[in-house]
Length: 399
Image (cartoon, rainbow, N blue to C red):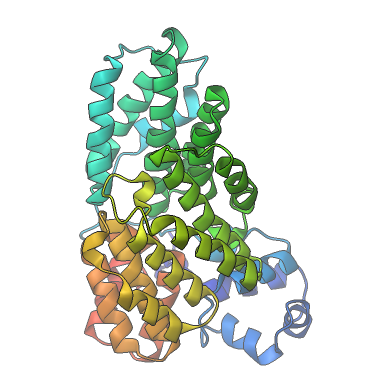
């Protein structure tokens, strides 16, 4: 039987120490490989300094020859009070075992009906209603596979487009929010597979966005690094199509993040600037692809400034965002999470905890399973404690 110490979620610094020792490297040697001081690395490993920048995690993972996923760790397996116990087996089964040439043995409702179900899934995703998504996505994805395998055009193409949104975006992003990294990866790959079969460059771009964010960007996954090139490809096919403009805009934001995690600040600024230019005439449409619009660009700008280590500028961008213009709980929660990270960088722990509690009310799974937020809460708990942060830590399985 495992002990409470063995069962608790490890801090990122502890994972760094485990990997460093396994590779037979000294603290001094590893610090030199990543261009940091020995004291900095010692503080990281001992939990006295928070490790929450993607560029640092990427550098350490490369130097240690491990995946960034290992350093970030995984959600704790135990069930805590107020943590719903979801059955993800049906979703896992359809993502793993079904395919365009091997659909599940089940009746398929007409595509017109499935379009309504997809809209229901989108509304649930906006509310961060994981229970509804887990209930409806497996059958929706399975029935779309049936149509892809058995229907003629234009029904087959319509089913492929819907599969990109259902598996490549909704299933992937929900699973990542729940900490189910393998399911998120499968969803992103299934969406990409559908886009390749469809052969439409704009929809290929939509699938590329889902695939790029199915995994944590700290690991510099290849799909994320591909987004600058894919954004350029989509730009050639935009025309007057509103959906194409939105897909292009989200790819530019993804490209900005790709540049940032690689340390290319000028490239990141250019990409996010282009996204802002694209969003300005579009405003904030609630049904836009992945909520592309002025407000969402503001959220991404906030994230990029936090990643660049500029908390003051991050808060300036965050303060310009009208949360009411963000149509989903997840984007509003992300804005609050980035505000919390910025406040923590400025040693404003009380402000950070306040933002985290607000975010938790909007999207509990996102807060509880976000690796950087888990690191942030653990760090604040170690340094100052307090009822509010202890409650957060308990709900995140950190104590």
